[in-house]
Length: 160
Image 1 (cartoon, helix red, strand yellow):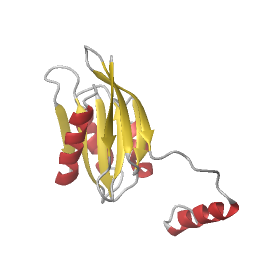
Image 2: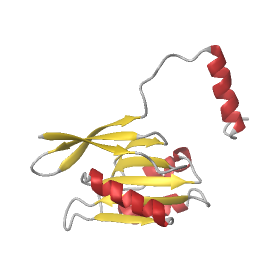
Image 3: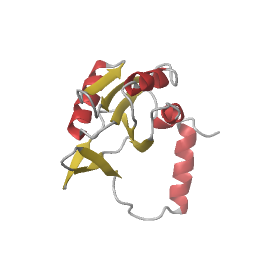
Image 4: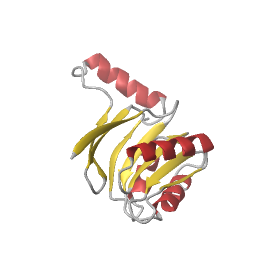
């Protein structure tokens, strides 16, 4: 067994969602879930097919994000994993719909942070064994940090 790391740096002003599914229709079903979640969403997705021709299936409504997601999914190359890059929406706007897609098994990460995808490769293929999301914690928030966090959430419209 060999271990590898694939770095995922989301494109500028984009978020990334990394997950695992189980069937070729995943790409089309994820497309439908995304466009039905946020009217102005822009996205691209890549889905690693792990049987038959073992191709990277890709969909999206933004050509740059679609190409980037397909290329990064190919680099990850782990059976039935999927990668979504999105703009004009946050993961919290779409995660519920994505989780309800019947083929989706799990979500590994949903973030704007850089990721490191930890991969195990065997004679049979590759699998995701974990994800490093962002940076190591530097401390515990102070009272001032609490105030800033709460103010920020109100500024961007997620709290009253």
